[in-house]
Image (cartoon, rainbow, N blue to C red; front, side, top):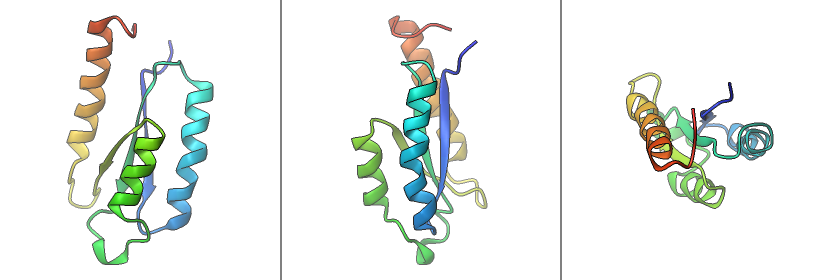
Length: 102
């Protein structure tokens, strides 16, 4: 059995956490199945005044690396459910279109 998806968590109040995402994406693409679905979650969106990375920077980076992006907050639960639903819908769509198998 191989992974259908992976979510990567980055802490938006830490530049170091955000810059680590590039290596994590590379590792996931190198080690996982070719059709893996990757989503980067920018966590701690509730701490808007302490941000080291803007939404625009993160979204641009994710678009350039062909991964989904969503801001989340574990504290408030904002977008946590939506992140998992995004992954699930994408996987189901790939299976239905024949671009992925189980």
